[in-house]
Length: 345
Image (cartoon, rainbow, N blue to C red; front, side):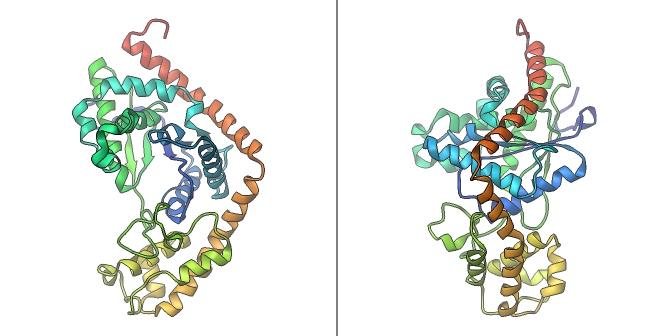
């Protein structure tokens, strides 16, 4: 048995799981915060499972054609960013029914008080909470199912998702306690360094977002080389040169954001960037960043465009990935039912 807060991960095969919602308009924040890191995860020799969480997307109404396009475009983004669908498992959530089956189990494990404390529901539902879908309220249980139906031991998350992973851990602990088993892992978050939170190019205090009305606030993963360079060169800065060290970035959000982006694209620490670029005027730093961004991102944009010309191949990759995912999820789902006393499991 695992006591509350105690990790039981030594009992489980190391496995990474993460998912991204196919909401369209992939941007630099998605790349540095997720796609680039996911592609790197397969180099560590840990089985990696990556999912287009299309069932999460429908917690608010989606235009069917737009959802299909966004799911395929996100898949193209994964592959163009370096993820090999033969070395990792890549699929869309709705093709693996065990996600929904496990979500119902966890709806019955999670407590109302736990769900009511989820800040993202409050943020997304706002003052119209009574008209929000039940799915929007309950989707953290589906998120827990996404992770635990694979017995994932590690989940790369941003700061804004830590609360949901804490809920996943609570659900695993309660299930194990209620049934006297050590069946679900108490999954660990993986929060990494520079570039995990990319801010707007127009306002360094706001997260880069596809919903920002200004297209100049973000670098879209579908932007061509000229557009990428233009956006970097026009990014908001302040009148002073870059500081000479990291401490000087503390009260300069736009400068800090551009340095973080440079670090993320160049695979350097912020300290390394400051040693190389500290003290330079933005008239020197921004062209260097623009050249780096074009070098790293333009080939991804071109490859995404190529992949989207053959959606049948994208669909085939997702279908193969879902078969491989079910090979892991189905036995775990059956064992869950058996533990709970379901006849025929």
